[in-house]
Length: 125
Image (spheres, rainbow, N blue to C red):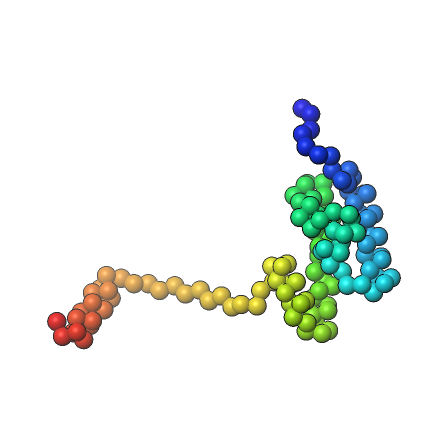
């Protein structure tokens, strides 16, 4: 069956990895912070297209590893500076600063009946 749609910008994992490595090397050389959009620009694509490559079996590990390296850079900057921008960026990597509390309350018929009776007594009924 013939493939439908536009051909991939990066036909192989090796070509994509080469370009990703070049981006990381350039950032290190120029002391530029690593970012997802910076990576997308270096790959001459947009952020959404870059993230779509993560849905392709042959590219998933390459993109995940690149994202993890960028996430690590944000985490290190946040530890060193406590910058709100870095915290915001980490939230885009599914980090959270909220607490979730789970509670299980068991209510049986007799406790509901007692509650109704108490309310009626308060109302004077």
